[in-house]
Length: 292
Image (cartoon, rainbow, N blue to C red; front, side, top):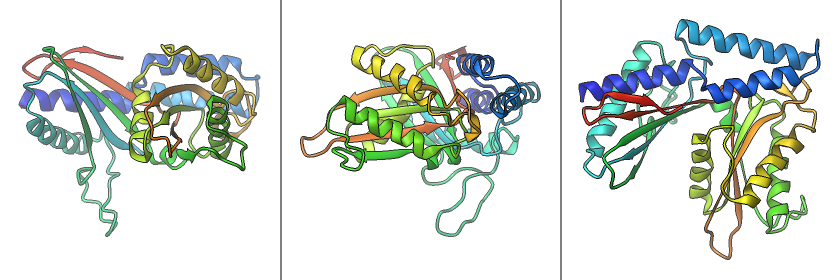
């Protein structure tokens, strides 16, 4: 497990300090789109400088290095218990090295033991397949953007949102409006239509594994994704809530089965520091290639 531990530490380092190219491209495009000499342009310039410094110095992009969420797609023979033990050790090592800040605290006592390890930290999701490959994806999700996530139950009389795609659109845009600049925008939405309260949020966060420039394979959801971004960017909220044309960098939406009595729309919000990385591992646990 030594090779695997080293690989996971490197995965954490990269995710914490280097934004994926698709995210950086979206930020640069938004910078060009903002009006010159505005607070929105200045905010995006600061964000761009922060991205460059973090990568150059191999230091966390944000002081809140976030919840640590691993998604593992593996062969049937993977030792899941051993993997999770190694992931916890890797998180502890990455924290000691400064790739992760000491963020995780005991919810009852407030004690921070400096390891970022405890119940639910890190969170590891396993998905097996019958192939021979193992891929590990990592999301580091900050607490500020987690605070502005939202879950709606349709119908919603206040928003006049019924149990249809137009109703979903209304509550998604309401979540953006309620977030304002509190989620460290420009943000990215991960949305699940349907599911129960728990799986809805789980599937909404899995949407963050997609690239910003991909397109949804379901036509009606693809159309909804594009509409949400275009409409949100006309709201005038802008980067950090300072006004401007860039409120969202993207929206990724899935639909899950639900029970007839329930119709939930679960919305996870990701800040501009969209820390998402992944690796393909060989049988020895070494990194074969990077996924983003």
